[in-house]
Image (cartoon, rainbow, N blue to C red; front, side, top):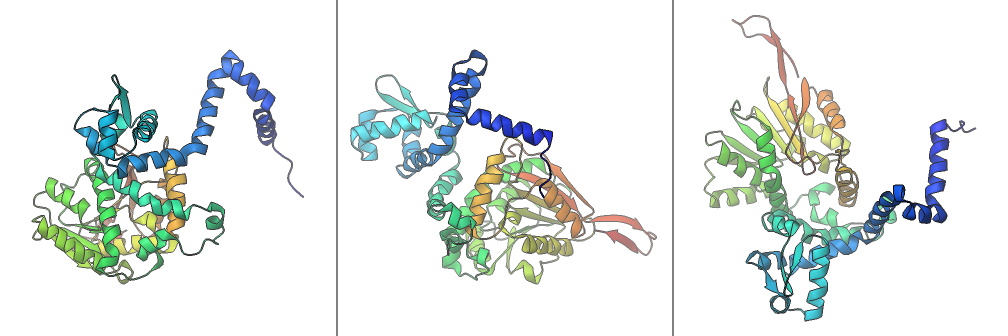
Length: 386
């Protein structure tokens, strides 16, 4: 027998029936005190319905290289149509759509220039790479109910990220996602490094470091800090080639392997940049345990990734990454408190969140394998917790 509804549940039911009423909606849209709320909700609902079209407008702008073209300065509609190889009226359709999304701005004399979001995109090539990559995600989400029920069959994203299914891959297979990971990590590297103090680190190892974009940023800021990249053998091999071309082969050692076999015990600081959320709970816990085992007493783990429940950015962690990882076939977005609990479970003595500039893109947890007390200083016989 079902429990009686609480007063709060009954109130919510009444409220929902009221809001669903077309008569109430018409009244709210005309009443001065509710008119603003009604219009805002109408726009929000329409944006949810039309979001796919907005994303395709952005995709068209990226594929046509519109933002780079306009970075040279405003151009007339006719000139843009020629540069984009589009009929004039179709170019006008695209440009007006992009202007409505604050990607470009319409100027006098039928000219167009960059708006704020378009200008920001020109300085972040990683975003354009993600926009192109979304073609795979759109295809996987064509039937979201089948995906949710596990009836969608092999997804394109699972094929793109072979490690998500536990599949070993060669250098050719990891090339596409290696480049995308690099663009993604470069986008947040400065935010992470602005938030953490590495001045006391003696050796930093980036686990799941891709082709080394994050460590390249570390090397630029910390000129003498020894650095190691650890990733699957095929990925580590590509990283070694890329870092050698950047003149960093002597600064950054690249080691290939799997965390399932343990991590090298050489660093006192380990970073996991957008890695944990790619794994289901069991493998994620095993990864954190491997990091704990590899660190010396007093060692530090830095975990950075977008998280579920981020205030003001809930759709990013819960909707976007939730469905992306579902399509990928591995992992899930986790809340900060979930990750901190996982870290304590594997033995880290402390785990706290450190603020970042843009929590929508990445949040940061710092955990320490701590020294609690020593029996005496002469024998260095210590008891460690964590």
